[in-house]
Image (tube, rainbow, N blue to C red; front, side, top):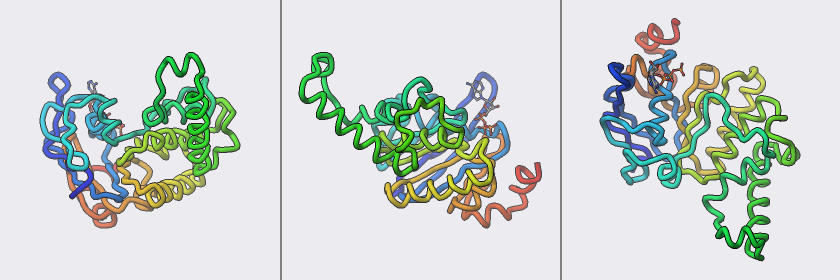
Length: 252
Ligand SMILES: Nc1ncnc2c1ncn2[C@@H]1O[C@H](COP(=O)(O)OP(=O)(O)OP(=O)(O)O)[C@@H](O)[C@H]1O
């Protein structure tokens, strides 16, 4: 059974059909890329997959469960986490607390326990600190845990966003232009990190990216979107040779 099965997804904004009849099947453990020119509808698809927008048509099934039309919290609990094109961290919180916020889904204590600082509070806070640090270590951010997120260099902020998304323990990780604004060295490092996450967290990744070095470097399969519709899909090397794709996108 596929991890993600999307069929005939569509949405309109007023008179604009932003996404139309979009289908995609992603197997567990795949590194999958969604590419296409600016305004093709890629982020809109992410917004539908994560419950920010309700699709007008189609179905989204995650791991056998129909999640179409559910809200963002329900979808995150069902197992989809994402990062954003424009980094969205809690900039005035520490690096550690940014990850701990996302862990709260899985480490629950009552308000009473929290307000009165009962033993369970300290026990869970300690467990969350350890889990958050473990995640930060993967991204080599553990020694920066007590810094404010706003103080991190750009590449580290992007990594922290991925760490925070992973803290919700998703089945599927959506990355919206993870290499945006990165230099070639940072991008190469990011590719290693994404591969590491897939291999060590047993993760499935769908990413939107304009940086072709990253797309051809790590994506096993691609779907190409043009004017809201699927132009073609398949193995990365084959898709990138497709003349229609070159005309629509790479020849820009
Ligand atoms: N909330 C909205 N209201 C109206 N139009 C929208 C809304 N969200 C997206 N659109 C439109 O839908 C189309 C697809 O936009 P989207 O941001 O999904 O493209 P994209 O492929 O992610 O582009 P880019 O690569 O530039 O990020 C665009 O024409 C955009 O203006």
